[in-house]
Length: 132
Image (cartoon, rainbow, N blue to C red):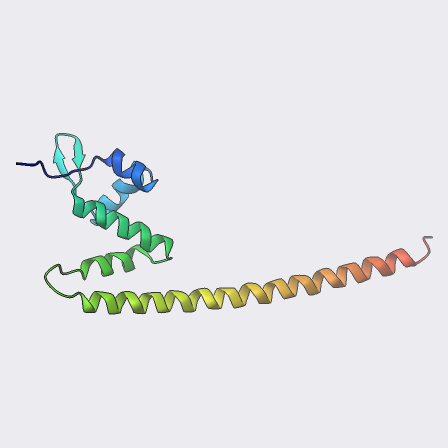
């Protein structure tokens, strides 16, 4: 009989390049629920997948609440259509946010370029005037 695969908090922290404190935070938020063997946390493959999904969501800019919602929609016995549609909508919303941020950054860059150009013109005018 093979022993069920489990992970320590240190193993998961190293694998996902996060601190153990980060993993404990997700535990405090109720997103992962490791078993306890004395003072030791023992994580299951399901906990590992959940942690992976949380961190992927974070990289994509999803809030913890959004990740919790998507993870909570997972139903192993179904085709997960509702979860996939919700994820698709969240991706669409995130892309719209990023597009707006990009437009805002481009506008700000243009304003900085304009201000810099005015400064250069003013400095050139000062340099061309005789010093008294």
